[in-house]
Length: 184
Image (cartoon, rainbow, N blue to C red; front, side, top):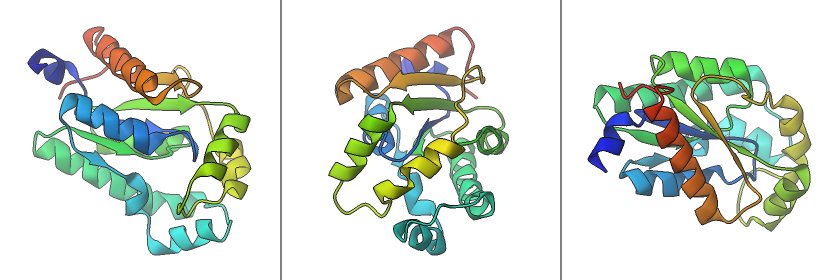
């Protein structure tokens, strides 16, 4: 495990649209590597949460302060030489690039990818979440899949949670060994 900790990125962002399982997968990846997990939604300004709860999609201007707060958390973890797993939709390439810049390039992404049907059924089954299922289509329209971007592993969400986590960890290790991610 010590060797794995040295080759893992200092920070991992578990990304994708609402309902893909960012929190569940992120929490388990964090446990696998003994890293803290941070729920990115908790960093949204209250005004963003209110908009989403009312079914109003966020704009780039709404998301930028939130992304900056996530970047600050990543930087703080790196400065403390502590790893971090954080959930964040990171829907657009420029959002991910903003986070990469905040992390000095020492950042990996786990992209949770799934069909609209699976995502919608998961969102409809959730209890007590501020994000209504009605915003799924706007998130899917905003999503720029990270295909071909550096430091990204993609995991399909159509399997069991344990299998998704195992695959994500395996892909992260494999990419780190190949030099795809920096240990910082």
